[in-house]
Length: 418
Image (tube, rainbow, N blue to C red; front, side, top):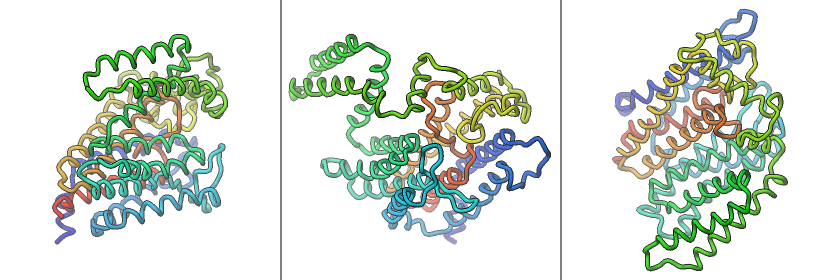
């Protein structure tokens, strides 16, 4: 009876959008990896055949998630988190190094990226912790504990090094913000990113006075009696120090390929046949699709293999070329619809755990979607972030599926009524 209730109450709109995205993603992968010689769609020697296998594996995974006791996700959240951390640490002993990164396990023909699954454990433990310390983050130790849950996996992922995957974890600040986490954390991060970019393109002789003027204006407009000129002065000095350090970090900390990607984003003089090649080919492919696209399997950029890694991080270029603006808009609408639906369902929860987990899922999916699309059109540096349910890869597809259907299970099982 309970299983029948779960199947009856599962959000069918979310499931429908999920199926549409996975199927549309496979069509794009098929087009991007189609060999010259005819081959069966089930050919496991081909990328599209492997992706079809991963899609098939998602069926039993979903079945298990829907029929297990929903309480295990709350009860064993710490166990799931620890397993994720152990898998991340194990990479430094058993991981495979490729292109300077050690972020995969390779067992024969099977590979697995643990950072994709660590996101699930982190989201579960964060939801569990917040549900235990509600109603608000009053104590500083509570804030530190929540930050530690996020930063521990980030630390090990940065050691791989995989800045793209690490950046995704910061999306969880959006879920924290929903639960009345101090907003100055978000503002600090946003200002740091803006200051870093401005320090690379604006002369210090202009930027530093501008910083002190902005702090001065904010001080005089602040009507609170508790305003403290020493606090403002300290923040202004700290910001100026950070700006001074940007050039050193850019020249001595970032890897050459990372500097190239930032230069491409900022429009610096780059060789479009070298460091700017990926972005240039990506924009050519998307732009050539015009309004209605060239048709499925008819993309010349796609068939010619001009876009590197097109079946993974650059899969959206296939959509743009073969289905045009209209097809791209459909994909954007599907993702937006799924995100809004998750947020809507999360707000309906009366359990803090299921609400926070729902917001965490929405935040992670949003960050993946936003970064992947913006890097393809030159609004963000290329950082190797897959498009959920679209990009080729068993780890990402299965991990995103688990992440989504845990929440749908929580919602369908009415965990909010515990």
